[in-house]
Length: 221
Image (cartoon, rainbow, N blue to C red; front, top):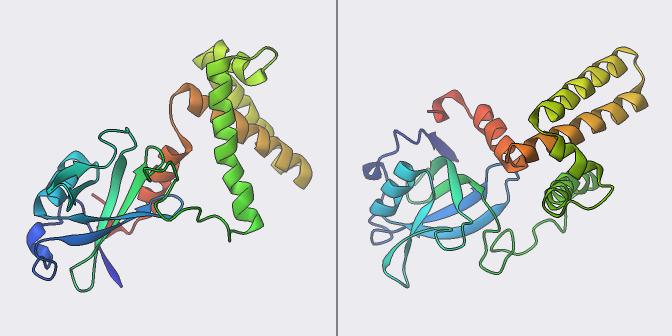
């Protein structure tokens, strides 16, 4: 059982540092997908730095020094929340990864965690693939690409298109046509993803906002 702690209230003296000779294991979990990304160790100084910078920082036992995850690669872990276990000697950190967490290029340090996911999970995972396709179309600008053309039209046109698609979804729902509602909802989600790409906002950023809203009141700042 874990106890949610406000980031601003979590103090080093609340934790039992003696068991691990000044170090506590810190389990890092993706705030959106709930995948376990990695395990690291923290001392009081790295915990304080994590709370101050909102980027997860560990104590490296091999280097005998602090290291912020992603300080070289750019694949930082943006802090969402920290919880301690009932014995006060282990930390559970919810974070939003800026890229692959593992140095091998994998999303997690435990390999592919998606092998046992359901068909619905796999379908939802396609949103990440679609997001990557949109990003590549924006960068490469291939001929006859609807995505590239829409992104080139700029903020006003993209926002207008999202508004139009939102209205179409509402009208389809009012008509009680399930298949039509699915089609229009797909259009809305797709064009919203174009808007997010134009604004340099990731799906992970949106998941982090939703996850933050879903926390118990006493776990929020």
